[in-house]
Image (cartoon, rainbow, N blue to C red; front, side, top):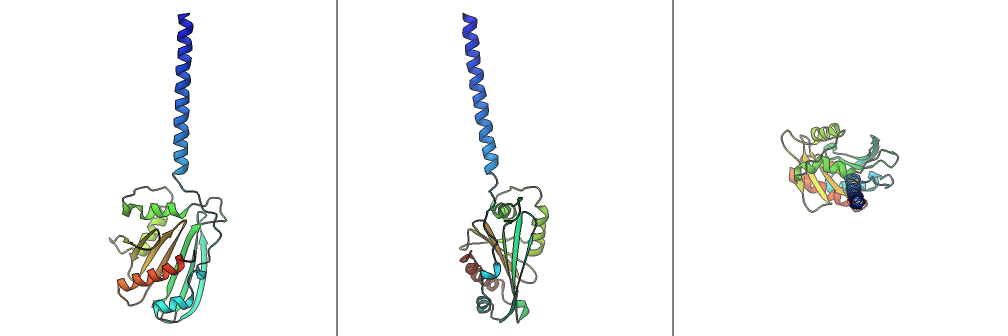
Length: 207
């Protein structure tokens, strides 16, 4: 009888242990799934429809001769660009929109790439294998050597300004999309930042 009691008690302990392990594994799996945001199903965004040529002219102070759209995809993200070709060429503007590639089964959420790229400037260290080349290309294109991006307040969910030898670019995050506004010209860096902010606000209002 004692043996039967002990066997029954042992079975109950094993059952409790197994239930606890299953609960813990389910929790870990759920955490792993939620660690990366699901890609957006948003349709393709036309960047040339976010800012008009007249608006660019008013902010940059030079007539826009033509507007040239383009796009590319790496299977994870779709990057669509609109180039506003100004009569005074160094006052031209480039607007790029990065979103999940709606046509790819391997699409990723740009918000995750944003965290991987700019997160280290806010104390975040998360990085995922496979995006090193994109991050390095972005840094080489937009940063002056040894000069990190400058955080901007009061626009979008998050924003950073990166300066280079010919001008600068403003990156702004909104929901599941981020935009890049790049300008040139002889103005001071402060003036370029203000112009980029003004252009970005118009684009964000139409996303």
